[in-house]
Length: 152
Length: 388
Picture (cartoon, rainbow over the protein chains, first blue to last red):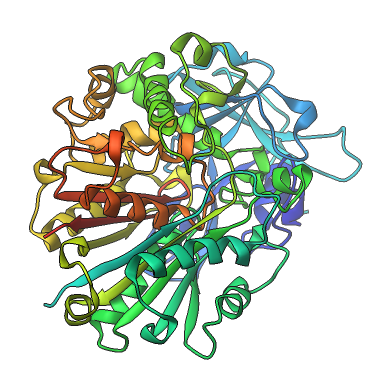
């Protein structure tokens, strides 16, 4: 199921593969260590602090600030038709960072360091297989979300 | 602790070498190092090969190189830590000698990057980052370093022109190096007008893939003194620093420096009993312009945040009062055959410390260093060399 995640997929399996199901349901999830409470994004199954392998998903608001960015003009295989796109690194409320493209509400030339942004879960419907990811949008952006986090 | 000496050095021509296989490239560098050392194969105890395997059709490249150099049945092993594989080979050669296991070791960095077609190269380039959370958004190598540049410009007011001034310097010296891929000077006007790659970079901020090989022969202090025909030619590898940092750009403490570089530098300085002030000439990892600019700071050649000013004042040129940096053209103009690069850096520093660089010679060069970064700093090796 982790193969659902990303604009393309290189990693079909992971111990945190339910992340992709939550993302499809509209939830951006980080992980928390059940033993020492260490919380992070991107999700990881194994605690880097206390070495426990017991973790739980924890909902992230997706609110954050731009840490850095670059507009890609020369793309690798699979992204040739998408240029230019802007990769943005966001420092997340709740701890950790993520990398994603600026989305529809955030024009590429308006991305600036330290600006407030909203990370939004996305289903990319234009592809034949289910494909989910997230984009970086203006604060206040909204999206469809299931009433409760669930793995169905 | 006794020392490890470099008793021979060799270098092939870097570029699109459609005329040669990877083992033939290795042979060019190996032969010239052996001629330089004036020794025979019987004098060698082992070899270390540096190469990044995914570029070669030939699997397990150390085997084919060892055979082609006619070094069987002597031991060999491959080192791979991305773009710093060559320095890793030097480090393990140094370790093998310091452990007492071997006395004389040939270190050969070799890479054939143009064997793959453009489509295969672009696919490989699409997986340079962390593939689970980052590469799935089409990140690229220039893109990663560009994100450092964006942040460095924001935090310290580093100018767009400062980045290209690094490329202009390296092309200036590349034009004077017969082993370089690009032996042509460039102007700021031309550099600014080039095609965009990843903002703020255009093509002149990026080094080029290349084929090539370099070789150095390491020996224990005792053997180096006994074997060297000219004792003054021996260069001593007195500091071998190495550190790592996160694979993922998301996990870095900041994006204005490479923490593994400053860690490796302080180890190497301490071990060699020198400080940044003692360094006369340096080969630094300028895979992208910002990488060299951050290296000035990470290595202590200037204060944090002053890298832009350092190049603007032309301090890294020869005779301008700073440390002469990449006066062989660097990765930018010389080309970057990734397995060979670290050994090529060591070759150049040895030539400088031996006073053999002609119009590119740094006056009074007695202490030099190499700074070889793997990936975006996942690995960094800093080596300090002395000529006495």
